[in-house]
Each structure stands twice: as C-alpha cells, then as structure tokens.
Length: 497
Image (cartoon, rainbow, N blue to C red; front, top):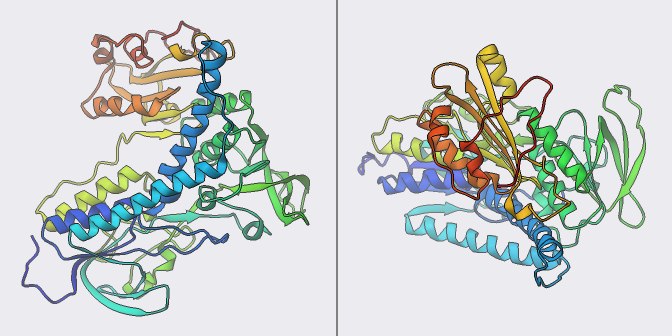
C-alpha cells in the first residue's frame, strides 16, 4: 500500500496514455489508495483526424470497427431474410453519413464516461502531451503550449501505437488510415486497401459489405502471424463475396488527380528496382494498413535512460512489465513483442497496479489469449496456430476439423456448405490436451470465449466429447468432432447446425 505520508513526489503513479490499459491501471491504483494522474493527448493524423479520451480501441479501433462490421452484416442478413425466408423486411439503402453520426455520438458518450470515471475515482486527468525530463519527472504540454512539470514515484507508459503509412511517395497527402476511416464524413466510394493485416481485411470487408468497389493489395500472405489455413479460407470467402485481391503487389507512389481522386502506381512485390511501376488504377479512397509503429519515440525516453527500439517505437519489458529503469513500466501496444489486443492491456494494467499498490505478486499470463478477426466471415482463435503446433509437436499433433452451416443460412442457396469451418488441435497422446482452437463463421468471437476458459482449465478432447451440445447451434459442432485432418485433404461437407 502507498504511504499517505510520502510527499516526495507529486504522484504515486503517473500514467502516460489514456487508452484502455492506462485507464484500467489508473483506476485500479487509485482504488488501492494511490495518488494517480493520467496524461492523454492525441496528435492529429496526417489527414487531421483527432479524437477524445479512451485510446485507439474506443475511438478508431475495436468499437467503431465492430459497429461498422455489424452494420454491413445487418444489411446482408436483411437481404437473406427477404429472399430466402420470404419475410417482410423493409428495404433500406445504407446511409454512410447517418452511420458516422450515430457511431461518433456513441463514442463521444464513452469519452465523456471515461472522464467522469476518472473524476469519481480521484484520478487527475491532464489533456496534455507528456515527455520525460528524468526518470521521475515529466513535462506536460497542452494544446496551447502551456507547460506543467510533475514528478511521480512510478511512471507507466501506455501510449499504444499509430498507423504507419509505409513511407511511399504521396502517401501522407493522398491516403488515409484506420485513424481516419471511422471519422470520414463522405462515403469511401471505390476503395483500395493496401495491406493484409487484420485491420486491412476487416476494413475491406465492411467497405465491400456496404456495396463499394473494394480491392485489397497484398504483398505476400494474408494475416501474418495467424493460422495460414484459416487466413486463406478468409481470403477465399471475401473473394467469393465481392472483394477483389491484387496479390504479390506493392504500391510505389500516390498522386492526387484534378478531381480529388488518388492515382496509384504499383509493381510486383519481388521487383526490387527503383522503378516507379505502372499505373494500377484511380480510386476515391486509398486506405493504408501496412503496419503500426509504437509511440515510444515521442516521449524523450533517453532523458530517463529507458531503452527502446527507435525504428519500431517499442519498449522491451520484463515479465513484470518493468523497463530497464526500476520505476518505469510499460503495457499494451507500445511494448516490444506484445499481443496488440485491448483486453491484454487492460488485464496487464490492472495486475500491475495491484502489484505496485495492493501487495499482489501474480504476473500477467500471456499464453492462450483468445482473439477474433471481424472479417465478413468472422475468425476466432485461441492457442497455437496449426503451423506452430506442427513445429512443436510434429507427429504428436492430431487435428480434428469439420465444416458447419449455420441454420440461418440453411435456406440460402448462395451460402456454401464449406464456408464455415472449425478445427481443434490436440496433443496426440493421453487424453489429447487441446492446444489450439480455430473457428470461421458468424459470431465466432462469441463462441471462442468459453473455449478459452476451457483451455485455461486444461481442456482435453475427452472433455469436448463428454460435453452435451446445444442444438441447433454452431458451437455444438465442437462436441461432435470426429474427422481427423489428413495431409492434402479437406474436411467432408456435413449438414446444417
């Protein structure tokens, strides 16, 4: 517990960054009696976009992304209900402007709520940009250039990261990123998405779902770091549902046309020459999703002696989230090698605060963290990818898999019997411990959470087999898996849920 009489510093904990992780850590520490302050300041994107308290997830990430995703999915579901079930569904065209207004209003309410929560938890909020003077001292600069100097016993860096536009000529002048798409006042129109990350595919998915001509330019593979079998299935599904892919290509430069569109030049990904390539096309919108850079380089960390990777903008930490300086910690997307997931930052922030001020000793467990990619057909996973599992277990790995078809799709002739897929990776010995679960289908994210709990508890294939499924659901397929994946063979097509 903090010593109430310790007034050597202005604050017991100062948090740099008002995203999900920083806010969670600050409120937890304050509840434990610490004197806590948070500084949050959003530098505008190259297109001038800025936002309020809450970080990337709330403002330009998870929350608006899923709202856009659900909006696109709702339109598709209405069409299915109308044509396949003969239900009276009011036909309505998508209204981009109304969606932007509604989403922005909702997010503004969250911004206000976070400020209110900080006040009610006695956490001081500075809408200022923080930089280090030394390991215990920070300079806070507000939007008018006014400066305040503060000191803290502990400092937590939770600044996250920002999109990297790739350094291509004309990118900053001509292109937008995920920082901008959710605040864009005009519809995207004909769109090129550059990149193959989950941000790229999610964005391309909802833009195509709204009916806009959408192309994804891919340098190499889809969803690097994810299970590649599942990634290719996502790509195939998206292609079959209207998204175009330009494979093994990279942009070389971007130019504005006289009417405000963007002319894109590109070449083959294997072309290492300085050639500007050839004209690829003219687009209303070009969205760059080629990676993100941590914000560590903005903080004058050298003044505090904190080690960081200047190129990646990331900070190395130990298993207790501590940097090389004993009173400075870092969590979330700014940490080198960290899972860039909001719940990870929240959990690690809470647990760090409990160790610093509550006498706890438990460390964050970064293994078997579930995640979902909100592409037009959702992909959720927990545990190892099949590639990593085969590398680790070799012949001691067994994979059970199956296609499934949601009942909602049963009467829709346009829905394939092999669109939805799941697989369970197990050790091929004893009770066959589950080491990975992968789901491709509607509401996959809702299914994976319970399976993540099961894996934390040591789930085996025997546990799945002994569980009674709920019928008719997609998730019941996990309790009836018998097909074993063989080299070069896909699962047999089964029935509906």
